[in-house]
Length: 159
Image (tube, rainbow, N blue to C red; front, side, top):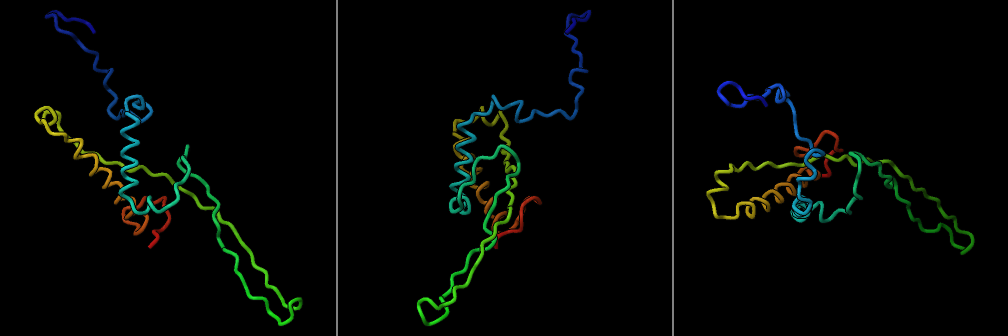
């Protein structure tokens, strides 16, 4: 920065010319407390019936994971025939299909002006965080069970 004749500082505003810049998760990862995000995710799980009852999927390093699942189950049959060695036994088969887990982000923003935070002696975060966890759990359940606001990359709803 340069000083002008009056002694005030001149800033090069071209430095700030990028109008669509964004701080990405990678840019701010060091600032995000892991224990807070982990606690919110755990709270969302506790507030979701689907996540409590489902088998937990492995951690994913990509946005999509292929998962082989049973497409048809074997059938059991009674042995046809009277003699112990003379009965006919039917055959059956099993088959697998590829299903894909598609990761989609769930987010909630609760804007609280700094002036409000400065003027209160009440634990606002203590009230906000459980409601965020609840909202995320409800959103996930509605998307999985009923297809409400489900991302386009997800399969059809369960019910």
